[in-house]
Length: 366
Image (cartoon, rainbow, N blue to C red; front, side):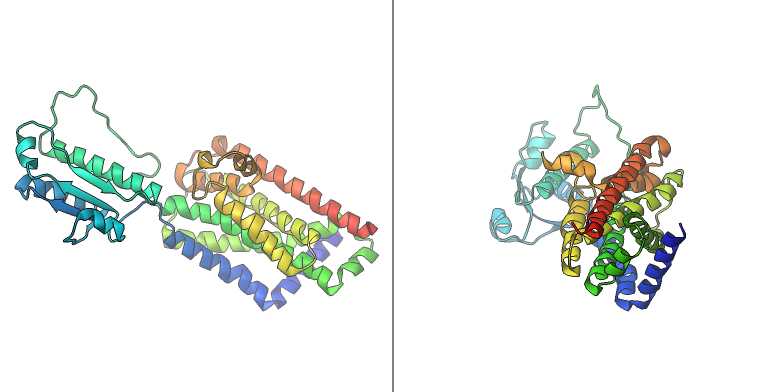
């Protein structure tokens, strides 16, 4: 245990003397939090649409006002054919109200309103379609054009996040991405630096085992990672006003376990690469892409196609995102995230064994 602590103290001393590494540990995670937290928006807003009102009646104008009252659409002034606004990418949708709109509606007859939607972005097109349908339904209800004797009247309530604050969904996911990328990157660089400087030979000549070397480095960068977690979670709470929704203990216990797995991932890559460039590329390619795309951070896990869906099962960020979103949004607690904690711990052990075996073979000269 004494040798592990000595190795950790040595790593922390080297970390403090390297200004570039300090900047990597403090500035880049904060910049990533701010960029992702403010830039990523899953709910489309201010969608430009063209409305051509051939009826120009009070009822058609009320319908137009209802569309823009949602604050989801912005009007585009277009004098030519409405569909050409989509062709030239000036608008994402065009709504054409027929000349007999008010006459047919007030006469209890159906009136067809033509809507053309730009389907280039499938998700955006689905949002526009559903929003216009919902607005039309609300308009008919406000104008008393829907029979009162409806047999089924759904009442919808948003659970966990009634204010529809996207930061409650995005920022906890950013925590998982940041705390996976940067601690593993620091650990990988530190491991490879030993090889490039030749100091790893001193370790091989000593009686320090591969496991003790790994645990010493891991302890040092676990401390760095915990400091990083405190900073970004504290700043995230201040800027985005995140508050715990339930018992914070699963998050408080899961964060060190997750950082342990992250550091083990970096050490494993460092043990298997020969240069810092290769280690950085490995973290960026394997770590960042999987944490960003296969963890449920942006896209639902159910949307990941086979066989990539199998890969997502061994991505630790997937399980930590479940813990962070439960802590800040759902508030279920242990009963909802205990499996996530076990998976993170198990994946960390696997990464530790892989790194230990790689270093053991190097010590033996295989």
